[in-house]
Amino acid sequence: MKSFLIKWIMVLAVLWIVLGWFYGVSFTDILFTSVVLTVVAYVADVYILPRVGNVFAAILDFILAMAVIWFMGSFLFEGPIALGTASFISAIIITIGELMFHRYMKNQVFDKEPERTETDSTYYGRPSNLQTEFGSEIDVDAAKKASEQGRNDDNIQSSNLRNEFGSEVEIVEVKRPKNKNQPSTKNKNKRKKK
Image 1 (cartoon, rainbow, N blue to C red):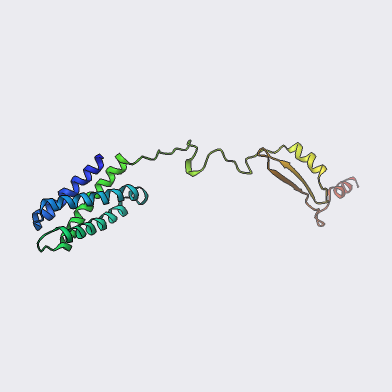
Image 2 (cartoon, rainbow, N blue to C red; image 1 turned 30 degrees about the vertical axis):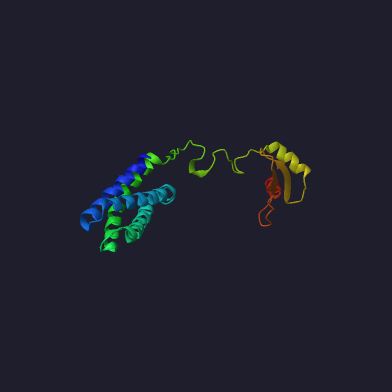
């Protein structure tokens, strides 16, 4: 309620100075216009400001202020006044005030987001208890036993294990084929004996 009253006093003061002093609009018309404008702009601030930021909300407030003052003025204000110019000047001054009011709303009215630290479980938007497939440990001895029991081709040995999360992991061991151009160790040993 305090923020609504601050906004209403700001709008009333601007409209009273611009419309009352320079254009001779009655205080009753200014009061009624300021209440309508404050209600419309405050509802827009509450729902739009947290989602879009200060600058876009201020642009929206300028458009709302000009439209509401022009609309209300066409029905309420008596006498010939330059309604477009009066609405434009009032909307510019209200928008400047709205930029400061939006900072107040962010600091005092809206819930502040807690600052995140590296130790927080949702730092960088991810829970910290997730692991990749590289983080799980595999028992090497069990993998060798399973590979001996698995399919035994000449070049590929494969086995299926369950990691710590219960999902199945396939371990593939590929034996390198012997290069025909590379002498085997058996031939080297024979040459040394001769």
